[in-house]
Amino acid sequence: MSSLTVLDSQGKKSGSVDLPVDIFGEGVNTDVIHQAVVMYQASLRQGNASTKERGSVSGGGKKPFRQKGTGRARQGSIRSPLWKGGGVVFGPHPRDFGYTVPQKVRKAALRESLNAKHKDEDLVCVDDLKESFDKTKEFAKILKNLSLKGKILALLDGSDASIVRASRNIPFFRLMRSQDVSAYDILRHKKVLVTKTALNNLVERIRQ
Image 1 (cartoon, rainbow, N blue to C red):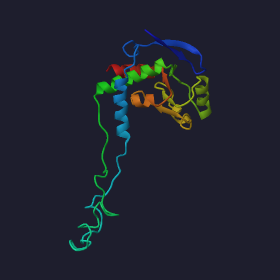
Image 2 (cartoon, helix red, strand yellow; image 1 turned 135 degrees about the vertical axis):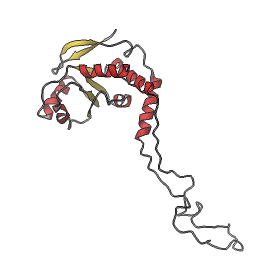
Image 3 (tube, rainbow, N blue to C red; image 1 turned 180 degrees about the vertical axis):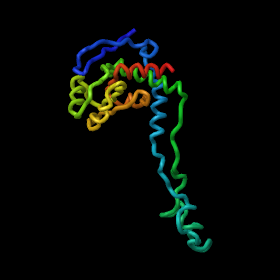
Image 4 (cartoon, rainbow, N blue to C red; image 1 turned 120 degrees about the horizontal axis):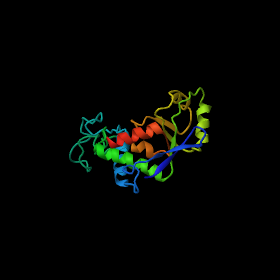
């Protein structure tokens, strides 16, 4: 059974937590991660592109010229797709690209994404931050003590509520609850910062 070092707000080791083997195993199943990430990305697509077919374009009620005798190809409407300003053939219309995968696959993807971050040493665990923060620089100092750089995803369950306000203006920092996070959220950030409470909540959520 592997373990994860727990740091305090000063960046010093305050203990460790044992990581369950059924979640933090040896290998990483990239197949379930791929399935979940593609699903989450598909649900983010707007799908609001729209074009007009020949029946939706205004005008074109009159035949542009007679059927025979002009030497030109016969035409029935100036709104034909062959004409400039005409309708579009098989153009895009508003649609929903979202779909779902089984809940077991989503939980497996969450498990494997956490395991991947742990293997890359990008999973950082801290004690619950119970102190109150009045200014952003106070919380930013903690991130500096933990040597966290790049895009950071923080799951700080069990910490003081003032962190929400104090971390709002920190660039490349996102605060979420462990019950809302997905595999896509974890993978799109370089570092994942979790409290011991948040880590336990994630383990319980995966095992449900």
